[in-house]
Length: 142
View: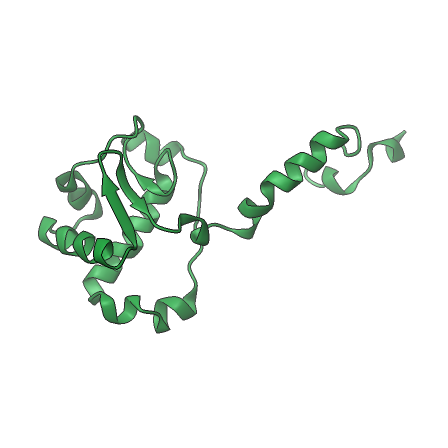
């Protein structure tokens, strides 16, 4: 698992400050549990199948491993998971811990990616490669 965490390409996920400060998480979870929740989001972003906390083979990680990895007591992890399941923030099965509405924590860039890829495949010669190639039409360089 250690290697998976270092080699993944996802570098961030989106949080909404207004929801973090004024949302239901503020009164549903204790400060320690909120910290665990944000750690679970971060951990999920590093897993092979983002949005699901599991190993590379899509098998659930032991709670004792997660608690150790997050540097928290197993009891704190268990109470946080229980509350998050009750509040429908997560589900848990043999495949791992699934973050409900994971898409909401993703960037606008990720959401629009399929549309950009489709546009490139429609006319592959339209743009040249490079850092700013998406802005330069290929035929203007001839």
